[in-house]
Image 1 (cartoon, helix red, strand yellow):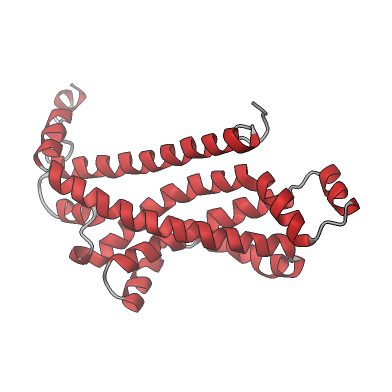
Image 2 (cartoon, rainbow, N blue to C red):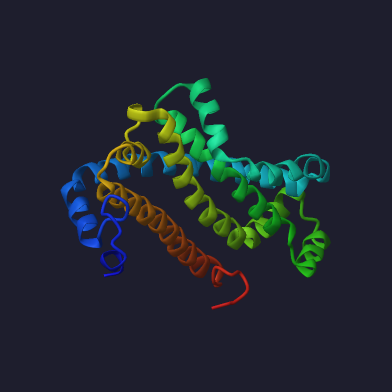
Length: 238
């Protein structure tokens, strides 16, 4: 109604029904592209979780490493991924691996910062109890710090999941037809006059990001309630 009232040309803002029809008409290509993007983002996210968790463990155990490197982990989050993506593609070549690497780069730092915060926020009473019983540093990390940091880790993964989708789509802009995901479709549709098709692909990308966030949230809630008896906030026992 608003579009007709303002007499906005369909080539600028298509009507909702035209977007729905465009989505239905290219459902197969959107689905295939979304699966490729999800695979690249998922691969990058898995790598980010492993690297981020290991790095956070090092930071929590070494004040020297934390003082020397942790500020850079925070600073690197401000680097635009669109500036890093072409460097990765030129260095590593065009293909799935470059897109996954870009997704990993942008999603690693939220895991590092969030998990490091959780590992360092240890209950003082429990820490003294572990020291009283002569627990080693490894035992303290495995049995006290890691379980207590799970809410922070999952929160970091939630942020990283959305970032991985963004990184994969940006990477596909530069990889092109070598990795024909949602980013490639967006690039192709933006060069044409079928804005209804462009809107359909953008909506699909948005739904993919929301889906990743929702899945990580649901799995995280299940894990925390099942093993720690708490909600994702890490503050409320259930």
